[in-house]
Length: 287
Image 1 (tube, rainbow, N blue to C red):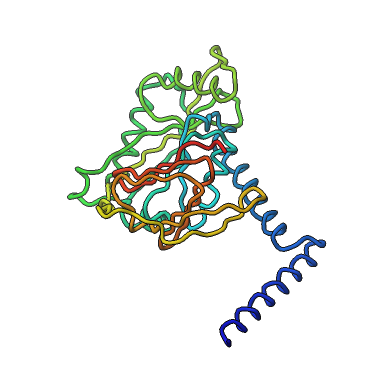
Image 2: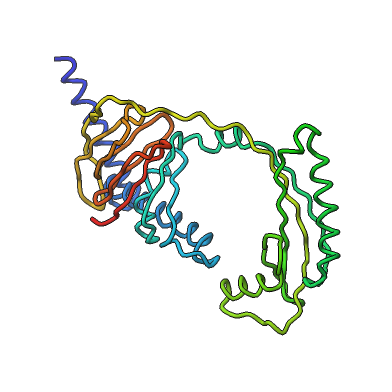
C-alpha cells in the first residue's frame, strides 16, 4: 500500500541520515553520537552545579535538586545521582518557571554603599543601613511601603583581604564572619580586624500567588509506552500526561512525565510521587 511504502521510505531516509551523522563524527553511528552529546551536557551541568554548591562550601548530599526549564527534567536524575542529592523536585509548569516567577514574583529594589567601617562600629553601621533603607522604601508608593520586606546585607572581609563574604545584617557581624570564613575556607583569623566594605538594603514587595493546579480524582493510566535509550541500553518506559495525574499519584522508573513545555525523565531506580503542591518528588537513585 501507499502508506507502507511511505513508511519504508521514511525508514530509509532516517537510516541515511544516521549514517551521514556517523561519518561526520569519526565513523560512529548516530546513536553513539547522541549518547556522547547527552554525556557531555550532563558533565557540563554537573560542573556548573558543583561551582555553586561544593566550591561554595555547600554539601549537595543534604539538598534536593530542583529541575526546571524545558529540558531540566531530562537530566535531573543523572545529575542528582552524580552529586549525591537524595531527591529531585519537579515543579508544575517547570518549562515556564522563569516567566511565571517574573509575573508573580512581586517587585524589588536595592541600594548599596561602600563604607569601609570596622565591624565593631555598630552605631555607624546602623546609621548607614537606615539611610539605605529609607532610599529603598522611597522607591515604593506610600500604599505599598507597609508590605515591603527590607533585608540588610554586608560585604565583609579581614582588613587587607582582596575578597569579601556576603552576610545578612544583624547582631555579632564579626563573630558570624569568623564562623563563615572557617566554614568556607577552613580557617579563621580571630586576631585580625574585620572590615565591612559594602552595606546593602534590599526591599521586596510580595507578588500574587501563582495559580495552583488541582489534581484530578480519576484513576491515571499511561498514555503510551516507548523505548528509551538509557546508559547504553534500551528500556521500555511508560509515558504519563502531567495534567492527568491524580492526587496521590506515584510511579517508578523508567517513566516519562510529559507536559506542555517540559519533559521529566524518571530513570530506573527512581520513584516519583505527586505532592499536594503539584510538585513531583523523585527519590531513590539506585539502579
